[in-house]
Length: 176
Image 1 (cartoon, rainbow, N blue to C red):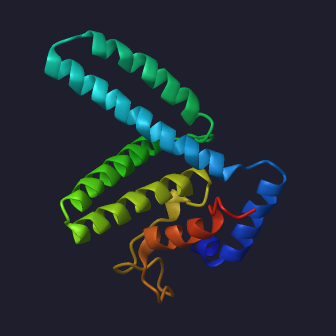
Image 2 (cartoon, rainbow, N blue to C red; image 1 turned 180 degrees about the horizontal axis):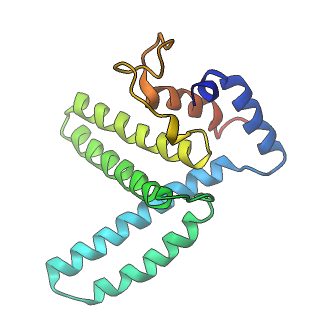
């Protein structure tokens, strides 16, 4: 993993080459991931609405939404070894929830708390992409020192910070 993150330029070049060959449409995949987040939220909202209103018809919608979400996730989560499928779903769901709570905190003018929640939301979102773009070898994730990836890491941004740096450069949907 450290080699992959230290070799950022090569990674960005590979992503750019894949974009040119139409093998990778990250801006569409990012939009799709946001849609999946909202579908997970819909599943939750139908559940809570059914429970709060005692109207089982809302439970019936959950299955339809779930099937739609599953079919869309297959477009992004291509190698779901072990529990990667469920991890991916929960990373997106947690990212969406943290974003929503951050928005509420921002509305209450609790900016520092909102910014912290936004950062955590984005870190989870980056972790989702790191897993699903095979940037992460989960077997190599180890805690060396607080915020460090390995003993030669002098920036001490931690794994999620480094992954965020990689993905910021690679997932720039505005670059042609």
